[in-house]
Amino acid sequence: MAMVGYVLKRILMVLVGYLVAVLVGLIAVVVIYAILSSLPNAPGYFELMAFTPVAALVVPPLGMFIYFLTIVLTGMQTLVFAMIAEFFSLRSFWLHMLFGAAAAAAGFMLIWPDAANNPERWADMGIIAGGGLVAGLIYWLIAGRNAGLRRPLIKAIPGKV
Image (cartoon, rainbow, N blue to C red):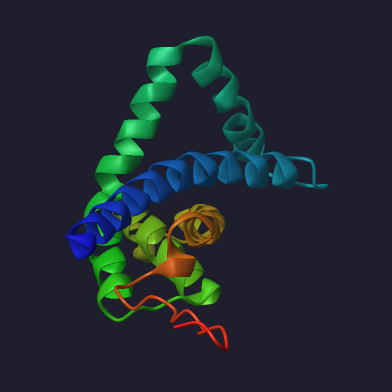
């Protein structure tokens, strides 16, 4: 019975970790665009992308649409990565960051399938992958550090069993 409780706790941690990581990853994308728009000779496109979150804050349904669209676009690959991490008890932060970047880039490729052939979209893909790196780190902080069914053994106190 304790094993069932532990598995349910892991499922809840994966779900909460994913939802929070998506939100923080979206914020990271906005911050990256805002920083890039302040660089000298930055394209006007970056300024537009840094302004877009203001529209999402002013019109909450737009913000919720962006959030849920991101969940739909990255959900399946993130589920696969989470299952791999849980099954093999992969607990390293860099691996979760790599998984996050790969999931974000794959989600971007679902929106723009020809992005790999279009050099104008490479910067966008890199920015989205950077947001995925941040999201992977947040996921690791919430759920990835204790991934898997192998729990650390409690050291026996001498004299007590």
